[in-house]
Amino acid sequence: MSWDVLIPNEEMEAATSRLLETAALVGADSYQARNAAQGTHCKIGEQGLCCRICSMGPCRITPKSPRGVCGCDADGVVGRNYLRFTAGGSATHSDHGRSIAMTLYRSSANGNYNIKDPEKLKRIADEWDIETEDRDIYDIAHEVALRGLEEFGKPFGRLRFLKRAPEARQKIWRDNKLSPRAIDREVSLSLHMTHMGCSSMPEALVHQSLRAGLADGWGGSMIGTEFSDVLFGTPKPVDTTANLGVMEKDMVNIVVHGHDPSLSEMVVYYANDPEMIALAKKNGASGINVCGVCCTSNEVAMRHGIPMAGNFLQQENVVLTGACEAIVVDVQCIFPALGPLSKCFHTKFITTSNVARMPDSDFIEFKESTAAENAKQIVELAVENFKNRKPELIHIPNLVSKATVGYSVEAIYDTLDTVANSHIDEFQTMIPLIDCIRSGVIRGAVAMVGCNNPKVRPDYAHIELMKKLLANDILVIVSGCSAQAAAKAGLMDKEAGKYCGEGLKRVCRLANIPPVLHMGSCVDISRMMILASDIAKDWRIEISDIPLVGCAPEWMSEKAVSIGNYVVATGIDTFLGIDPYTDGSKGIVGLLQGDIEKWVGAKFYVEKDIEKLGDKMIERIEEKRAKIMI
Ligand code: MSK
Image 1 (tube, rainbow, N blue to C red):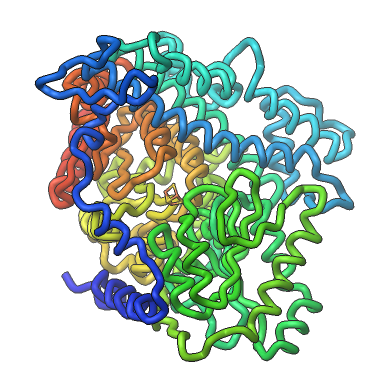
Image 2: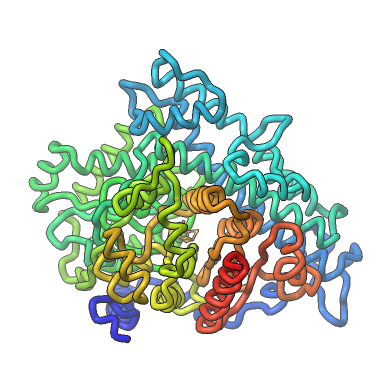
C-alpha cells in the first residue's frame, strides 16, 4: 500500500539529520549523542534488579546473590521498583490536576482566569451534589474546585469520579479492594509500602500499583482534564498543522512545551495582543507564531488550533532550527539539555515553575495571581529576541501536515449526531458507534498513547502500528506524544481516511473525521476511560469485553507506567513496546502479564517487535469480538 499523501518516517529522519549538522556546527549536544555516550544500558537495572532503597546497598540481585542484604528477593526488588515507578507517575499527573484545581478555585469574572464552559461546570456540580440553582457561576466554580482539592487528602471515602464507571466495573474494584481513597494517600502509601522493611510480596506490590494508577486516572488526571475544560473550553474538532515546518521564518516563534495549560493559554492570549504584534513588527518580524511541543502542544492545538511543532524527541529540534526566539516550559518531559542547547543559539529558554527549575534558563515564575503580567513579560522577551537571530543558522525543514484535532468525548457524541440520531429520549448515546463495531464495519479500537524513547526508532512504532490498524478497520484514538506522531505523519488529516480498510474508510467519510482521533494530552487519557465507560454502559457489556485495547509502543516516563496501571485496572488490555523494568522477576511478570486478569479482566502484553505487537493487538480485538458476538 502506498502512503503518498503521508509523510514517511525517512523524510522526518532526514530533516533531523540536517538539523544535527547545525548542532555540530555550533558545538551543541543532542540526545542522539548522549544516548550513544551512555553505551549499553546496565542489564541489572534494566531488569529492575537493582535496589537502592536503603543505604545497605545498592544491592544487585543476580544468580550468585539472589537476595539483597535485607533478604529481599528478585520479586520483592522488582515489585518495589515497579510500585515506585507507578507512584512517581501518579504523583506527577495528580499534582498537575491539583494545580488546575487551584486555578479553578482562583478563577473570577474579572481575574486572569474565567469559566469558558459553564455547562460542564454545572454537570460536575450536579454529579457532586453541589447546588447550582440561582448561584453565581464563580461561587459554583469555587465550591467544585474545593471539593476537587479535597479529593487529594480526604481522610475517608473513595474517589468521587469512580462513580462514572459502569456499576460492574465499580464492583470489580470494590471486590478486589482496588477503589482508591484520597489521591495523595495512595501515593504516600506506595512509598511507605516500598520503604526498607515493608512489603516484598509481589501480589501486594502489584495490587497497590493498580490502585495508585487508578488514583491517577480516575482522580488526579480526571480532575486535571475536567477542570481544564471548564476553565479553557471543552475541545471541539479544529484544524491545525503539524511538524517542524510550522515554525515561521519571518515571525517571532514562541514554542510552548510541558503540560499545564494555565501557562500556555496565557502565552497564546498575549501573542495575539495587538501591542505585542506591533512590537514584533517594530523588531523586524511579520508577527508572532506560537507553536507547541509535547502535551502543551495538545492542549493549545485542541482549543485554539495552535500548530504542533513536534513531540518529545523533537524538543531539541525546534531550537536547532535557529528560528526559535523562546522555548517556554512549565512542568514534565522537559530536557535539561535545553539550557545549554539554547546558549548555542539566540533562543531564550524560559522556565516558569518551581517544580521544574533548570540551569541555564531564564526563570519567570508563573503564578495564577500574576499570570497576565508573567505571560506578557514572556512574550515581550521573545519578541525583543527576534533581532538577535543568527541568519546563517536558520533552517526550518519543509515538513508540514494538516490535522484535525480536539475529539473530546463531548465532541465524539456531537460527531455521532451528524451521521445518526444518537439520542434515546433526551440522552445522547454511543449506539451509532457501537452499531458500527457490532456490524464489523469497524472491528474495534486501539487507544494509542505515550512518548518517544530512543530505545525505539522515534515515531516509527507509533506510525507503523497506526497504519496497520487502520488498514484492518480498527479505529485509533490517540493522546500525548503519540498524537503528534500521528499528526506529523499526516494520519490526522481527514484525507488519510482513504488509507483505511473499506469499513473504516466509509465511516470516516460519512462522519467527516480523520481515522486517527485526537483526544488530547497525557492527563486526557482519562477521557478515554470515560469513553470506554459510556460505550460499556450503552452496549450493556463490561469494559473488558469491548474490542478495545491500549498501546504505548515508545513510552518512557513514570507517568506512562501509572497510565498503564489504570488502563489495565479499568479492564483494557495494554500493549507495551518497552518493558517496565520487570523482566528480572518471574513473579511480577507472571502477575502483570497473566494473573491480574483474574482481578480486573485485563493484563499487560510486552512485545518489542512492532510487527508482532500489532498482530497481537488485532488478535486480541478479534478474540473479544468473538466473545461478545456469540
Ligand atoms: S508529554 S509523558 S513524553 S506522552 Fe505528556 Fe509526551 Fe510521554 Fe511526556
